[in-house]
Image 1 (tube, rainbow, N blue to C red):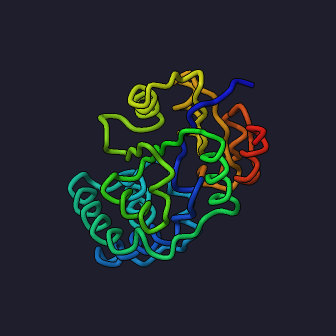
Image 2: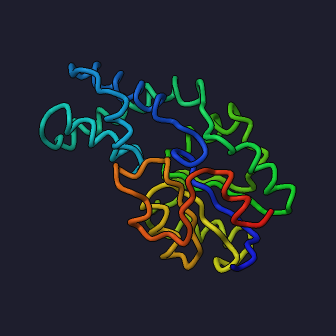
Amino acid sequence: MAEFELIQFDLDGTLIDSVPQLAEAINEMLEHLGHAAQPVDAVRHWVGNGADMLVQRALTAAEGQAPEAELHRRARTLFDEAYAGHADGDLVFYPGVLDTLERLRAAGKRLALVTNKPYRFVPGILAAAGLGKHFELALGGDSLAEKKPSPAPLLHICERLDVSPARTLMVGDSENDVLAAKAAGMAVAALTYGYNYGRPIADSEPDWVLDDFAGLAELLKL
């Protein structure tokens, strides 16, 4: 196995379980539009492709058909306003995340964050979670012209931190993470507990499949 200098992480479904906050915001949006709230488990299957797709899936479920563009724009504004009040509240880490990040830094690994979540929410979440100190660079889904599954964000981080993709490991939980890493020419480890639209992450054929975050330290022989 290659010696990895840089490790890039997804956020939602990888480091934190953000579905409770997302569900609260989605349901505020839906109720404002005259629709019934959706169960948390439904929202869990809608997460992973960024806020636009999350709103699209919620509206489609509520209305029984894909929303028109104007309704989608209005709903997205309502969602953003609602999520701003929930994004950094009562954050839940997956087991082993904090200890493993500390071990990685102690071992001299460089860490970065690449999420499809709109960047406006990222600094507050990292601050509330005490994670900001771990990452040299963080990108949101709107930080660049393209987001995962495009390799552009991953390659941008490599360029900014002057580390080759061959010496970089991507760690995520969804097919988007796997596709982005493969297109960027970097190895990828995928976690089984996150948000992958109800499909086994092994179907996406990452280099390694991990059942828990602490397995990353074992994989890297820390």
